[in-house]
Length: 108
Image (cartoon, rainbow, N blue to C red):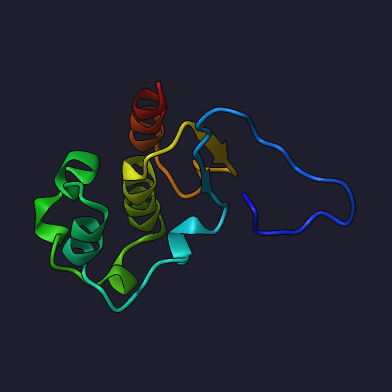
């Protein structure tokens, strides 16, 4: 992902239009907690309603969301980023079974 420089040698991820996108283990907490959910989603150009089915939470501050809600929001942001390679580090942390199934379906 380019976050760490190799100690020696080089890292090559592909020769043709590889656009990596990483969902880190702590992605849910690595959001701007002062923004509302809708501000965060608009910034990512996707509707959170489709991911959470809780339209009443759109104006909530991200800081007030549960761990699972933050994870679903982070995954919404992740999914709208153009990419051809997904690097997933425990993306199902804090997710309930229906959300895990939604994640699996979205990736498929």
